[in-house]
Image 1 (spheres, helix red, strand yellow):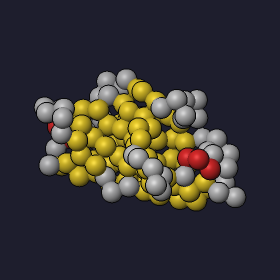
Image 2 (cartoon, rainbow, N blue to C red):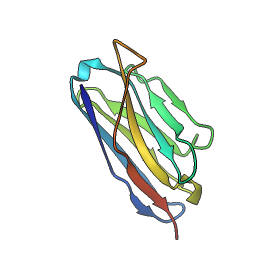
Image 3 (cartoon, rainbow, N blue to C red):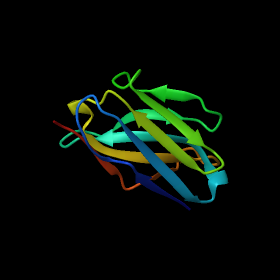
Image 4 (cartoon, helix red, strand yellow):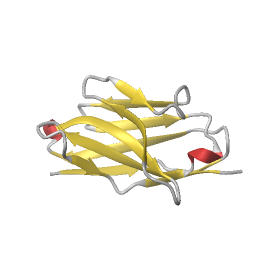
Length: 118
C-alpha cells in the first residue's frame, strides 16, 4: 500500500507563487506516474499536471507556462511549482500516484488547500 501526504498549500495574493510537495511512503517501487489534480467548490476534480517515472510531463492548458511539475525518485516525492497564480487557481490540490504493476490502481492524498486572493 502507498500513502501520499501533500504539503505547501496556503493563501497567496494574485501573481504570487507556491510550491506543493507530495511524499509517498510505502513501497516506492510500486509507483509509476505521479500527478496533481485540483477541485474547486462545486466543480469536478480536474487534472493539473502529471509526470512519469522517467520525467515525461503533461499539463492542463490552463496552467501551461505557469506551473512546473517535477519529482525526486530517490525521495518518492513529487513537486508542483506554481507561479503567476490567479484567483481561478483556488482549489484543493490532490496528489495521485499510479501503481506501476496495475496502472488502473491509483492512490490519492488527502489534499491541500490553495487560495489565491487579495
